[in-house]
Amino acid sequence: MTIKDLPADARPREKMLARGPGALSDVELLAILLRTGMAGKNVFQLAQELLTTFGGLSGLLNAGTAELQMVKGLGPAKRAEVAAVLELARRGLAEQLKERQAFSTPGAVKQYLQLHLAHKKHEVFAVLFLDSQNRLLAMEEMFRGTLSQTSVYPREVVLRALHHGACAVVLSHNHPSGSVQPSRADEALTQTLKASLALVDVRVLDHVIVGQGQALSMAEQGLV
Image (cartoon, rainbow, N blue to C red; front, side):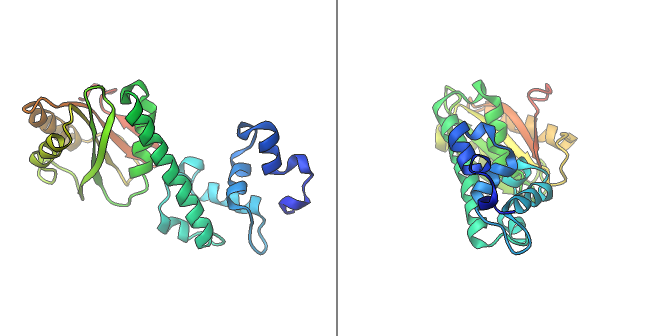
């Protein structure tokens, strides 16, 4: 069955226009984005396969272009459309964090970092630089590879904080393994950076660890 075979009031686009996007399932919303299926697989089946493959909508939005390329039936145009939605989500969250205090909406901070880091196959250490009202000034991916006190250079983090005129920072890195539990090395690194940044009067508000579909705040665990 194709979308055209459905009654008008059951077609995702018409249903959304009549009842709003909240009335649609994840499959229906994704079907609108994909528009068409492929030989032997209608658009609803393709949408469901994508959600199943990536473990739901969150996993799909965190998927990298290389992962999307491996899905049969998802050609260059559809991959570009999914990637565009992901980038719009990133930019929308960035605007939200620039316009209001980051920690008035802690969920938005985690979502923003998940969209940036969760899909990466290697460890990345990133820093959110915040102004005096905890609004986002910039985000920088600063180091890659296995993270430790020897692979992340406090001097570089301090220099970038001064460059942006930051009053506070949120540290973040991803765990490609999926677990978001902080290691002893994560705790030691946090304390080293906290002490270094304190010398230039920059506060460390949090260290967020990102995994596929989840994020952990070390501040909420009492580790910052």
